[in-house]
Image (tube, rainbow, N blue to C red; front, side, top):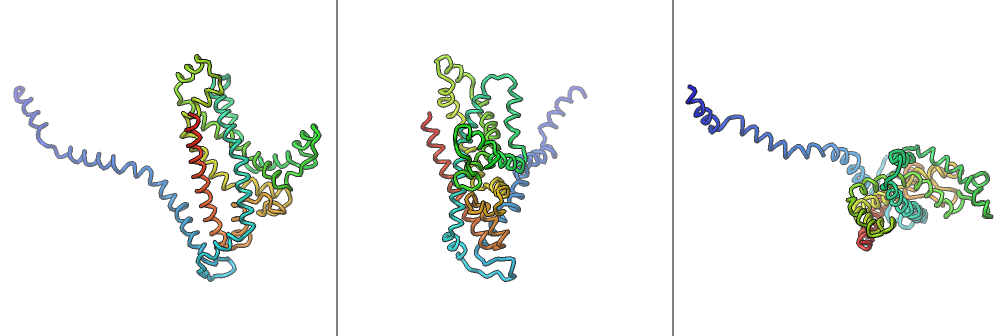
Length: 325
């Protein structure tokens, strides 16, 4: 029995088992199907709350669709042709681009610089990193209320400070340029620290040997940032620029609340629409005038503007990244 045991075991091992093919099949199916199962919840939610509303608003934009009538007459592209001739729409487009540029460009430059400083050896690094995230988690209502008081004409701290150097008080809520600057400061205060932490995470992956070699060669901190850090984190910069562009084209909460504190209309963006953005314009048409067909057309044009702006920023960022190498 003992002498034949190895032969029996070899025969059993060489004989095709019944459970092994089933195990291999289930393992193969698990390896192929599990990735799709993991990403399925996202795509289901995206189809329900992203793709379906996008397609449905495209259908609504081709109709005269209001809450005052149960009949939805098909009018083709009339809403779009009317929209392109609407001065209020182009005013909102200009305001959106102006606020977006004023808030995004300085914000990203400052975020990269702050991330570069936090990437260096500092005491209490964790404290500074947490502090950078505090503005982002603060309620936007609280932010706008506080900054509206700071930018107040008669008793605002900003006018008091500039008055010390002989500048006359500025009516921040009334002018186009002044209101854009005030809203941009709010946006910068909220999102600069958040973007700085994203850049910091990318900088942590840059090999330390590059900085050590640059320091030995006598390169300054700014030169290391320009020659090493920025080229190495270019994919992250492109990502942040695109996301910031999309967010800038959808600005709504800050001008909406800023307008309420100034005594203007809820969605008009001030008495003269001096800071009405595209999102506020869509909100006004859809939920004040209840013209859903026209609002849907404006939403689709806004969506196309976002794609164009993101594409332009992507190309510019890639070209600037290549020039810095």
